[in-house]
Image 1 (cartoon, rainbow, N blue to C red):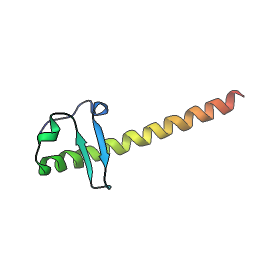
Image 2 (tube, one colour):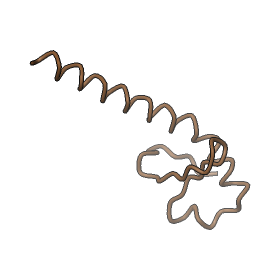
Image 3 (cartoon, rainbow, N blue to C red):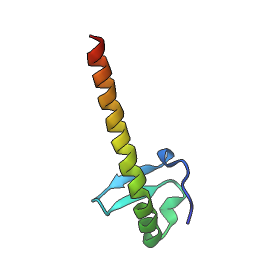
Image 4 (cartoon, rainbow, N blue to C red):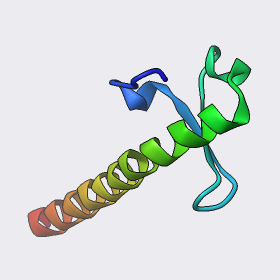
Length: 68
């Protein structure tokens, strides 16, 4: 199994919460079981990244409102 250090360079498909598929050109040849293992390991990273981006957007809005 390949360790993904820079997960932002990878693309994600959401079929359902457990149906997350991580892919990059060399991942498309992996068997479905390995894709599932990679997806489960990557799910927490993706959810944390999405949460952080939402928080950053909210902080920008709050800062913008404070300057006016």
